[in-house]
Image (cartoon, rainbow, N blue to C red):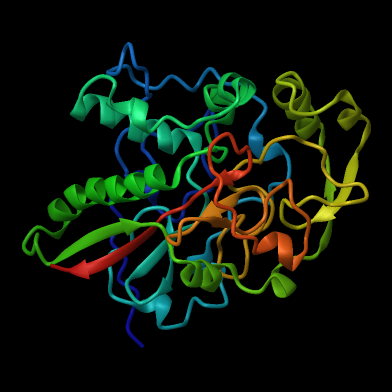
Length: 331
C-alpha cells in the first residue's frame, strides 16, 4: 500500500495540533485558506481581527470531547481513500478519490474572511450582495459577536455559498502553486457545494450515527452558558439549574428534556462521526448542490422526514448553514 503523502499548506494547520481553535485563541491563520486571519469591517477593511478579547470561558466547554484526528484514529485510516497521493486542502477529509469535504460547517470567522477579501479586492459595497440575511437578534448577538466566531454562519443564500466555495478554492490555488514549486501547474483545486449523494457518503446512515447520549455540564461549561448564551438571550436561566442533559450525540431537538438553546453550537461540538466529520446530522441544515438544505438541525427532530427534508428556504433561517467540497484535479 502506498504511503500517505500529505502536503499541508501552512504550519498552523498541522493535523497534530492539540486543540481546535476558539474565539479567544483562533490561531494565526484561517482553517479554510491558511491566510492570516483578517476581520471584515466595511469602514476599516484593512484592520486585523481582534478576537483575543473574547470571553475566557471557551465554547469548547460544552458538548466537546477533545481533539479528534481521523487521519490517525479513523477506521478508514488504512483504506485507499486515506492513502491517495493528493494534496489535502486545509480543514477537509476525503470522501472519494480526489474529493475532500470540510470537516465542519463554515463558521462566522471563515465567512468574515471571505467578506474582507471581497471588499479589499473588489471594492467597497461589493460585500452587500453576500451579507447573510438574519434577524437583528442574530446579527448583533451572534453573527457580529466574536464570542461565536467558530459557530456556523447562518442564513447564507445558495448562490453566496457557491461563491464562497469557489473563492476559497481560488485562494488555495495561490498557495498550491507556490508549494508545488517545480510543477506549479500540475494540480488545481475546484471548490463547490457537495451534491446530496456526496453529502450522504460523508454523513453515513442516521441509524448508525445517531444515538441517545448524556451531556454533563461542567463548571466552565456553566460559566460559558451564563456569560455567552444566556446573556445574549439564546437560553433562559433555567439552563443553569441542570448539571446534565439527556439528548443525542448530535445536536438535534430531543422531545423530552433536550438542550433548550436557541442557536447552533461550536462547529467542533458533539461527536464526530465514524469518518471524522462533525455535525452533518444536526446543528444546522446544510446546503447541497441541488439547491436545498438537508441534515436536520437543532430545531428538528430525529426522524427520517426531518433529517432529509429538502428545505429551499435560506434567508432569515437560524438553522441553515453549509460546508464546501474541494476537488483536486489535474490541469
